Length: 452
Image 1 (spheres, helix red, strand yellow):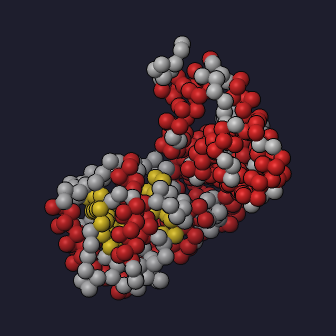
Image 2 (cartoon, helix red, strand yellow):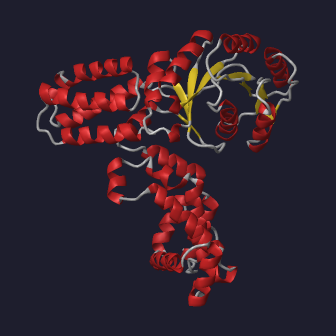
Image 3 (spheres, helix red, strand yellow):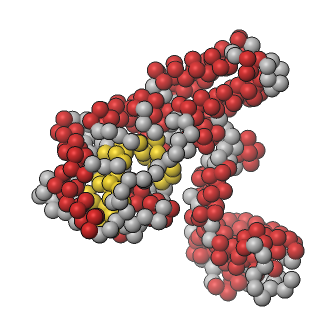
């Protein structure tokens, strides 16, 4: 997301960074580039005009003129105005009402409401320790209720069954009563969508809203819808008392203009970004961090949080203990590390959070890197357990058999073995003191039973 905008703004920032002083002329030049970058990213024209004017007023003020590093001061202004444009330093998604807190999801068909309902349930269960119930009021789309029921099972949420012949508002009202009796913390109500905004859809959503009086009414919108997303948000905002917006399919839009437009036009904050099909692919929207990513500064804080949340600590400690004791790093260990990368969303997900300069310096194609990781796992899967434990026995004939089993060339197996040997040598160098430092960081000290 925002790839196009980041590339354009990064070039503008680099041009300004080395300037000894900032003048009205080069500020105007930079703002022209920023304006073009925003329009190319499909940001709404009124939003672009307001943003450029705000940046211009501050950039030509004393703050930049008196700065020892005017270029960096201008970047700081861009960052602050982007944060403001996307909603300021908000408090995020907070459920403070009396349980069961009702969360209503509304939006057009195809935006991903049903999947988002399951993603939100998973986030509430895993991150907020909430007891969550789900109900579908979509009586028109075939198998909509069955889809939500199956997704609820995947995320460990409770699904409340309903009669497809009942009115959507009655289904929602009945679900709320069940959620009260079941002592649930949160009830997520999934509503039906349409291919376009129409009066029948708005009336149905309005009745559901009146039936359950939701604490949170979230508009779910496809980030790739561009200006249509803004128009739909405006229509739903006039019908419902929206409290926030969820942008789905954010990983598929390199422009990101909807994210910069929807907040400004509706006045409602973006609370979550959907970044994939999997039920864990939902992240809270943080304007500060997103502004940093747009300007090519990366989002290292989110990367660290992701590592803490998704890396298998027990597996990391097991590998560390193994190295401390002088046991060899084998191909099974390498496979485990590659799977950890996949679990975190692959190289593309990790590199997206790194500063642009670091990514350029690495000169790595995330897409190619992810293909390489999958190929390496397939090669290791083609080996016998004994070959993984004792890689030294893998001779030419074994390499040919492994290549056939993995559907790759022998050269691919050779390349993997070369990389593995390099890693193995590095692990041997880490035996003892240096690995103890890693263990100390992992667990606050050496595991019981290991020599000091």
